[in-house]
Amino acid sequence: MPVTIKNPKIKLFIQWFFLAVLVAVLAAGLYYFVGKFESLRLRGYMRAHFRRQITAQKITPDQISGWMTFRYVNLEFNLPPSYLQGALKITNTRYPNLSLDSVAKQQKISSASLTAKTVNAVKSYHP
Image (cartoon, rainbow, N blue to C red):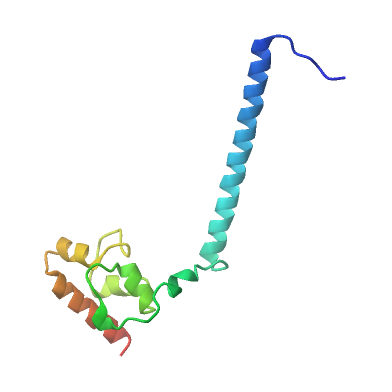
């Protein structure tokens, strides 16, 4: 036999309470599954294959430009993640998510000079 609640304040409180519990359970579930997804991605079970399909053709080291980030250059030339950081003495904590132009500005050198150093570093890694 169902229980009937006649007091509207209590009825409203119970509805809000169940809604809050439902939202909390959904949020906890979402947090759990996002964490599991990220864990699988970091372990290498789920790779972002689309990144390699964005460029239809490989670029050459001479095509490196100031707008490119070090992450992009590392991925494009299959470099270890910290190779360019060591070769170019980059200390910024945002590496590799920095463009060559922004690092050149930070190091107070011309963009062309840093681009040339980057090209030489890439060529020395892949002779």
